[in-house]
Image 1 (cartoon, rainbow over the protein chains, first blue to last red):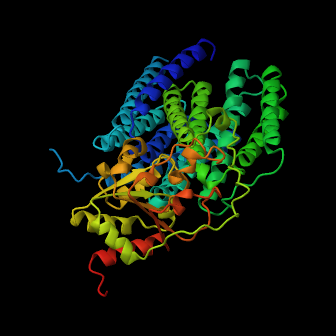
Image 2 (image 1 turned 45 degrees about the vertical axis):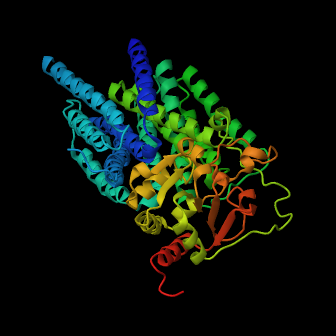
Image 3 (image 1 turned 180 degrees about the vertical axis):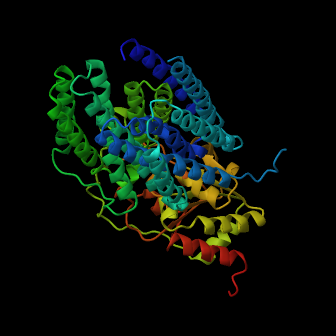
Length: 98
Length: 465
C-alpha cells in the first residue's frame, strides 16, 4: 500500500472516467447485455481468489478462497455465455454488409 | 530472485493487455453490429488474465484451484443458459455471486493480516466487506423477489429508513473503530454481520416496479467492492474492471432514476420511496369502451402506422413470440409497425429490447422514448401490451398524482389507443390510469398472449365470421 495506494487511486480515477465516457455511448437497446458483460468482467476478482487458494496460507483462507473462486468462475462462465446468447438475438432486417 | 521478478513482470504485462481488452469490450458494446466482437475481446482478456495468474510463483498448490474452477464452471453453465424471461433474476444472482467472492476474499485477507493491518489498508478492506456483504444479501433478496420466491410487494413499516440508516451507521462506526484500534479483531465479524442484515433490509421495501433502479445500483456496488478488493490486493486489473463496472452501474442507475422521476440522493440512500396509493383510488367506477379481438384486428388492419408499447405484462404472459406474429401479419399488409420502449419498462434496464430481440423483431424497429414520443400524434393506433404506469398521462397533467413528473410514453396522443389488460385493477403502483377512460381508448380484456393470438388469427382470415 502506501504510495502504491496513491498510484492505485490514479488508476481507479482514470478507469472510472473511461468507463463513464464509453458506457454513456451505449444504446439503451443493449443495456441488459451490457450489465451481464460488465458482470462477467467484474468476475476478474477470480484472479485474487485464485492466488489466495494457491498460496494456501491458512486452512481458513483456503476454504474461503475456494468458495470465492467457485462464485466468481460461475459469473465468468455464465456471464459471457448469456451475453453472447443475447447479442446473437439482436438482428436487423437490413441486409448484412460484408 | 531475478527469475521471480521476470515472472512477476510477465504477469503484469498480461494484466495490462487484459485491461485494454476489457475497455475495448465495452467500447464495442456501443452498437449491436460490433457488440459480439466486444464479448470476444472480454473473453480473451479473461482467459489471458486467469492464465497469467496461474503462472504466479506464489502458488504452491493447484489442486483446490482446479476443483473450484471446475465447480464454478458447472454452476455457471446453467446460469448462462436460463430462459430470456429469467434474465433479471439471473443478473441479480450474478451480482450476489460477484459480491460473495469479494466479501470472502476480504474476510480471509483480514484474518491473514490481523492484528497488524495498517490503517489505510483497513479502511479500504472495511469498504470492501461492507459493500460486498450488503450487495450479496441485497442481490439475493432482489433475485428472490424477481423469481417470486419472495413477495414482490414492498414490505414497509414505520421508521424503516431510520432503522436501516442506523444499522449502516453502526457498521461504519465499528469499521472506523477497528481502523483506529487494529487489535480489536473481535469486532470484525460484527461489521460483516450488520452489513449482511442491512442488505436484506435495504431491499425489503422495494417493489417490482423499482427493480430496474435497484439492480443497476447493486451492479454499481458490486463493481465498487471489487475495485476496493483490487486496492487491498494491489491488483490493477481488478481496480480497472471494478471501476468500469461501478461506473456502468452508476450510469444505469442515473438513467433509471431519471426515467422514474426520482432524485439520485433518494436512490443512493436506499429510500426507494414506494409510491403511495392515492386515497381515492377505489372511488368511482367510470365507463370504459372495450372491444373484441375481431374488432381490434379490423382497426389494426386499417391503420397505416402502429406503435406497440410493451411492458412487464408482456414478459409475464410470455407473449413476445405472439407479438412477433402480429408484427409479421401487419407488416405483410403494409402496416408500419414500431415498438416504443420506455427505459423502465420491465424489471431491468433493456429488458423489453432483449425479449423482443429474442422473438426476432429487428432491433431498428425498437424505438426509445425520446425518439418516438414526437410521433404519437401521427400514429394511427397505439397498442399497449402489459404496460401501465409508463403510459399514464396523469404523470404529465395531474400534479397530485404520485407519479407526476415521471417521463411517459405519450400514447394518449395517438389517434386510437388499444390496451390489452387482464382486468381494470390498477397497476403495480396502485395508481389509476386516466388513459383507459378516454373516448379514443379501447380496452382489450384478456391474457396478453391469447389476446394477441386471437388478433393474429383474425388477421389471417379468422376462419369464421
